[in-house]
Image 1: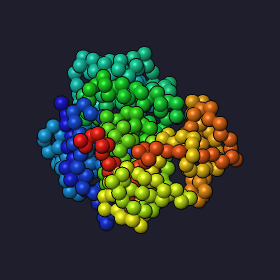
Image 2 (image 1 turned 60 degrees about the vertical axis):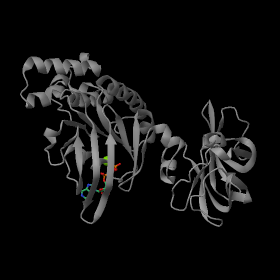
Image 3 (image 1 turned 90 degrees about the vertical axis):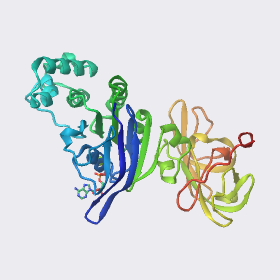
Image 4 (image 1 turned 90 degrees about the horizontal axis):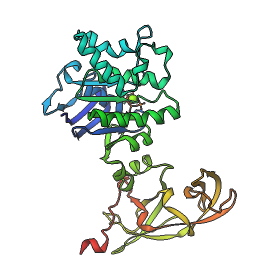
Length: 365
Ligand SMILES: Nc1ncnc2c1ncn2[C@@H]1O[C@H](COP(=O)(O)OP(=O)(O)OP(=O)(O)O)[C@@H](O)[C@H]1O
Ligand SMILES: [Mg+2]
């Protein structure tokens, strides 16, 4: 049992405010991923949880106990870093056993724990080898093994896969998700890779400039991004954004004029926006199909087999992307007509906040 509560955490380095009033309640056995662009404060927040850095204000609470002042070793936490260091002259066994040797643990118990960790990580036959005889992914697993043997309450991972090549990263992603299930442990995982975040997380925290933009399950962030930032960060290829002008507000939603004079009625609440206001209309490439609506000149066509990712420019020069069928009859250099269901559009006000969708009539009855 290990819950992890961050309460109003702020951090400044001199005049630079790196984290601003972050509160998160992480549940027992949950895998939470912190994701955001470089410099947004992910590692700093993780280091504050681990006790390697002190928060300027706020509390860290583990299982109901305030550990804000506790030494890192006394927090029951284990952290795996991006650049993990293995001892090259020690065997895999000794590398994994290292923290237990430091604790002067009894030999039998130590061997049992290393054997269990090695089995979970499929390293049993590698135990006698030296790190230099392992692949990158196996070395990464040894580093993780070293954190498992300590039986921590909470695992912290800071971009543990970023040194691996793409294929290995994919494999390790699956292995780590499996490990999370087997250990039933509370884990916080930092990455700037939205695919890692989407595939591994129970819930994702999107950080931007030291603030939480949104905290929720992956598909909630995908379908209901709260801000323009989240909308553009989650999803591949990125969501298209068309700049629009509000023409009117009615019971069916907002009439918005977008590129080329097209007026769309978007089923969202006005939320304070009025005729004449600027908004951004977000459209996911995968929500677009062939049909009358927006004309795009195709510049680049990526045939992936099952899908054709089509990049081009709209009449007003705006960049646009559509994910079409694998065999879609489109060609580079030609114009195509695209259509989207207004119900699939996301609308953001000038502050970048989403305008709430109108409730479907049958739901409001
Ligand atoms: N010890 C420090 N002294 C001063 N500024 C720091 C210190 N540590 C971090 N920062 C600043 O805090 C901000 C957040 O850094 P942090 O390492 O948490 O970012 P990050 O989200 O982990 O980025 P990345 O994805 O590049 O690892 C950065 O602007 C960084 O320059
Ligand atoms: Mg970092």
